[in-house]
Image (cartoon, rainbow, N blue to C red; front, side):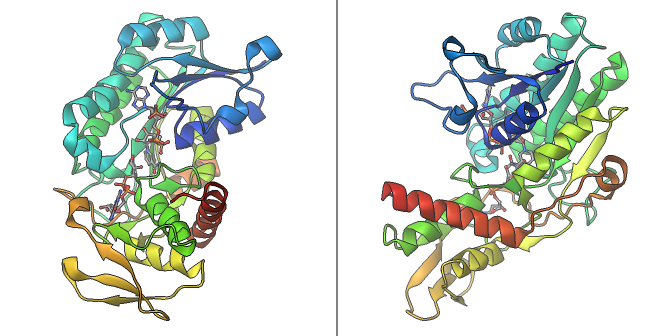
Length: 350
Ligand code: NDP
Ligand code: GDR
């Protein structure tokens, strides 16, 4: 029998890859998108077919994680077997500027969806996936980080996600809902939001290479992240939801890399070798051949509290879900730079 999934955050990076995956498995997919003054569906337009033009199993609905009546109605109308709660104000730095909104959407929004399941009596009918995050580890208490590592959130975003994590655990224990947290480490792709550091770097490399931009300004280049490919991670989300028992799972590559090294790899894709000069806010990345300054620091991008090092231990997911990240960091950088080069050539814009 065809399964039905409801995906919040369907217009985001993971929403796109997860929709592709579930549609390829024969699911009927209902996506929740926000109303905006301009089109915000670029990532999923290739999946959408106007129902007037023929059969489809991909539907979009307006909605918002801050509107409980809307969420209850959507769960009632779509009767999902599985809900994937991917919607969030997902930018850590922006969460320092919009802390209350972030708490509302990312924290209480999760509660609203769980309550919708309960109010509609769907505790045994709907499985729930919560997009939890390695940001929960924050000021890390143990390396590598695993399911049992204590949390220490370092941003309004992480604090909101911490509430979402525990309310998911609580609803599992209190009401026996199949509700799981995927504690996902950073995952990227050619459709990663443009202001996250990896995409900002690969877009700048493409623009600099085509003469559309001269320099890339970054914040803390010492930060280290465990970066994987979003395509691999949505497969993990699906396996988490299919597992017999609802649990909490780390998905990661098990390898960590500094922002600085990511920059080096990205410029290497267009044949440029960087030499680092100066220190602290005066550090620059200089083209070894031409002497052109390609990378400079802008303290505007420093965060009030930073997460210095993330490195995940994905062994539980490997052993019990048979999941592992298959794309290397090098392949990821290659794919992202190639995509941004093609895009910049096509549009002629940075
Ligand atoms: P994106 O920022 O690309 O997508 C977020 C999605 O949430 C978008 O569709 C956005 O809509 C939507 N959204 C934002 N606010 C609301 C709201 N109030 N109501 C309804 N929808 C809303 O994030 P990713 O795809 O990268 O991440 C997916 C989820 O996983 C997020 O919850 C994120 O916090 C979490 N996560 C991500 C990781 C990563 O490395 N990518 C790692 C760990 C967790 P719009 O398009 O209109 O902005
Ligand atoms: P992160 O991702 O905060 O890990 O959250 P981001 O790419 O924003 O930052 C990674 C690291 O790079 C440093 N950095 C910069 N970051 C940005 N955005 N812009 C810069 O110019 C810059 N310079 C240096 C940051 O300080 C940080 O240390 C992402 C999001 O997807 C979350 O939603 C998700 O939960 C986590 O990953 C896991």
